[in-house]
Amino acid sequence: MDGSFSEADALASTRLQAVKYFDVVAIVILVFEYCLTFNLEVSLIWPSRWSLTKILYILSRYPAFFDVPLVLYYLNPTVSIEHCAQINTAIAAGNVFGIAIAEAIFVLRTYALSGRQRTVLITFGTLYSVFLVATVSMMAIFLRNMIYSPPLPHVPGCNLTGGPFTLVGLSFILVLLNETALMSYTLWIGVKTYRHTTSPLVTTLYRDGVTYYVFLFLGSAANVAILIGAPKQLRELLNTPLRVLHSVLSTRALLHVRKAERERSERTVATHTTSAGSVHFANDLTIMSRG
Image (cartoon, rainbow, N blue to C red; front, side, top):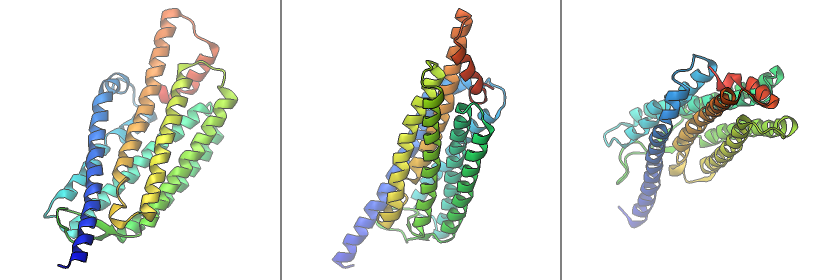
């Protein structure tokens, strides 16, 4: 083996190993977040009646514990290239599903903030559906054209090194566009309708909405740049972390809304009074904070 080949091989191995480290970190974050919010889930989600909000919460929270750990199978030194393709298909499907559910929760949040206006639901629901169909189509093409390299020194298991990664980048651009549209409308409706309110529910939704949007926007933008311009061994660096980030932030958004509503209800019972603005906003948020 000549020196130039050894140097290139070592660099490729280092990059692929970095991807695996990021995958493991994502799993740790997922488990740690679950431990942090488990008590809130038990008190706010488990006793509640079945509703769309509760179903979306469960679909965003728990499937991640099945598809995200599959990346650990990439470390199996005896796995075949054919099996690598099957595992990566399952992981990619889980990523698309998880992000789609998280985006649906953000659409629901925007619908609630609008005062449950049907036009808002139709507009953002249609936008969401178009982006979802386009994303699924692009991912299907990508999965049919994945390329795996033979095992490299010090990097056991599956090593995805080729394929039309630009399509994956385009799918994340669609996610960025959807989130930008939702956040733009959220800010507009906030300035127009709720700028004078002191409701904790408003504070919670806007604080979480802006914070989560910034994290998701930066993460998705970085992932697009990596998928389009980074060395091929690094193209999957942020896919698993972003899957986890969408799960964590969407479920936290629902938990925080329900917590704020519970605290408001407790204060109302204690004082037998509440502002008209708080009552109106709480009624608009029934689909997210109750049931």
